[in-house]
Image (cartoon, rainbow, N blue to C red; front, side, top):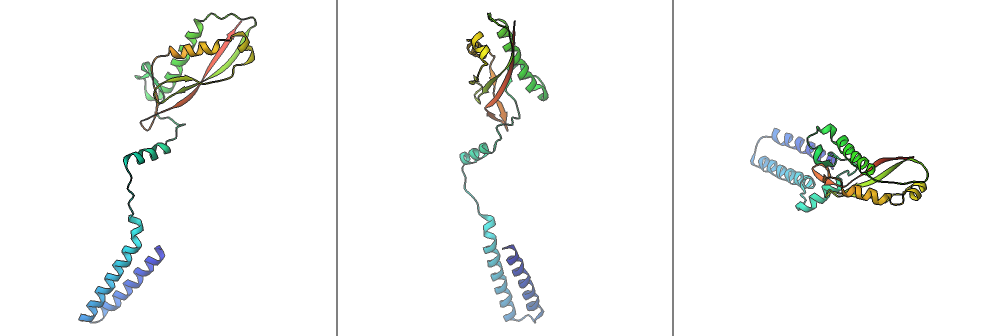
Length: 189
């Protein structure tokens, strides 16, 4: 389409040049006007595709932009109140340290009796919703921990319930749901 248009412009230019070189008579001026009108009409016909406007309402635009968000990459991590005063580079680390310390303190308060020693690391999957809720996702405990500490899931759930309020992660100023895996080292002798 672009080649046809540039070809037409070249022909129109040469035709105008020839017509203008002739003595300006009434007939020549009428021909020039016709060529200009035809040229303008063809230009408008070829360029209309570039000026098509889509009518979209606000909700459609928002839905489209939300689809484009890469929800695996967050610009701002979830925040506890104690982390708000930290610099941007330290926000993620503050979040991790706060939740790790809370779980460590919570587990240290528990009285756990075992028959054989345990030395294992668990990766606890946490879901932090766009509403700021922290949810313990299902995960498999190693067999030895299932038999020695059968109520460990309830202990983790109570630990989550006692966490301070958290603000959700954000991507492009939009609250998003994120997943974290919290490492918990269980070493009991």
